[in-house]
Length: 270
Image (cartoon, rainbow, N blue to C red):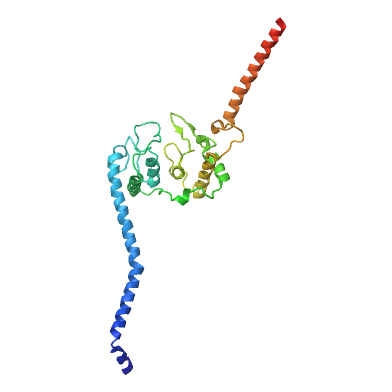
């Protein structure tokens, strides 16, 4: 006991205890405080984005979709559509729409990316829905192009044709050309099903499948892509090729037959 009491009364004992207490306090602060601060900062930034998005929505969207996104006779409800749908529609210029019609065409966008993100944050706060995909989800590098072609032909070619060059639909609608569409927007379109297009959520078409489809589209529409058969005739497949053969091939045969008959008749007269 005397030895322990002597150590406690040592001149450096108080300094050692103080240093130990500071080390423990600093360690606990480093372990817990930064994560809490980062979380608070993210929450604050998200709240700010939602508030700014709400202001933009009130000016450019509420007249058609309602003050709370509940929808009106001029525009559908946006509750639950998710941030991905907003990013697609606004980034491609389809929204805000200039006028009512069979479908909203692609045009010059009205909002920059920061404003688009704010609008998406506000709409996402109204109800859960598909989030904006990360770059790794839609980057076609390393994807299976052959499988993407198979998936595209089975699920998309009926409207967009075999190489994604688009085509006419009913009642003034059309499937757009996918040749110059950004990979992110192709992914978002498959995820959300804009306008006349059916949606392909991850339960129907897995993220890897979507990436494969994007890789196929980029390959067949690249400048380096070759068409072994010559002119691709719009990429519509055997229908356009057969029609071309009948119209021009049969027409050429008729022209040759008329020329031969005329030469024969002229020879007989001579």
